[in-house]
Image (cartoon, rainbow, N blue to C red; front, side, top):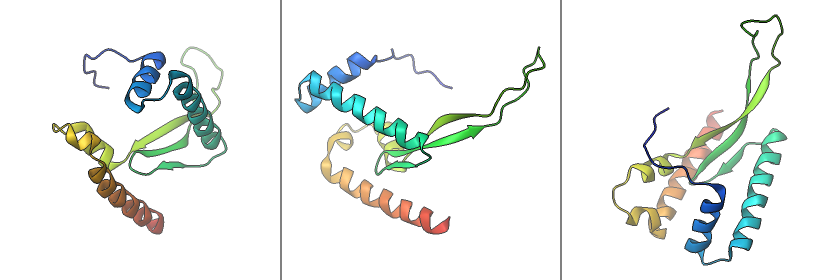
Length: 125
């Protein structure tokens, strides 16, 4: 995994930045954050794939357990949360132009593209 040298943002800092950007009180943003994470986790735990158009999808991925190196115990299979970013989000990460990150018109075009791409993937599977 590549590190960029940027500091990590804590949950508290993240919520504060979202509150500042949206103009909502920190308390409201914190409640929405907790609800969003809770619903996402519960949905994936049930086996659902959570598809957030224009952002990405979250799903449960099972990993095969293996024998511990210096022991004879088997490790049970376990699940991890897998996230796959949408193509448009990946493009926005590499964009040098800050207007592409906030321009609603561009969001709409990219969201339409992502929806079409998702429909093609569903038909193909």
